[in-house]
Image 1 (tube, rainbow, N blue to C red):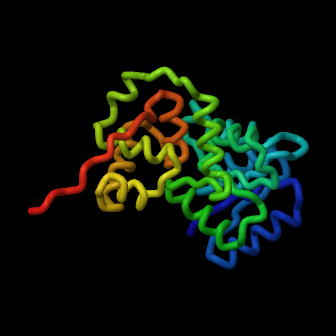
Image 2: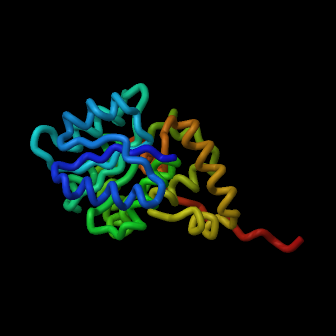
Length: 227
């Protein structure tokens, strides 16, 4: 069973999320009303996922996310930021701080449940209404990103193509179609890339790619010829 800690300064929001998640077999094992309290609770109960608000008195969610999942954290806990605000600085700041996903609070209940499960499984997620904008913001803030040849050298040419398409917001199915691969093959490639780069999900792999200047032009493969 997936174990979750809910972090929000409004008790009614935490109660609502608890009902939604509990009805789908997701176990809420802790709650907090501030970022500071969240760090204490999460370190004590070690959940599979933290649902983290951004703006809270007594400690913001982005700072807490950095403490729980940011660069240099030895044993990070996956964080799904769930916020009323879709401002670029919040989204970008949360992902840079180590969040595995970002979801708006007005998402449908089934979307919240799916997001928690995807983050728990290592997929990561950004709200579909924000994905393109988030990636554009990464590109704007990171451009021109110096190419890190050491990082780029970790990837095979095929892996480089897949990561570049991932950074453009493509799904596994879209990447597979563009490169004439099976979606399962794309998933396997991404799994190997995440192992090589030390990233725990697709979202943080995108962050890694922009930070190291790895996302670049894709040379689309030709379709397989007749046999």
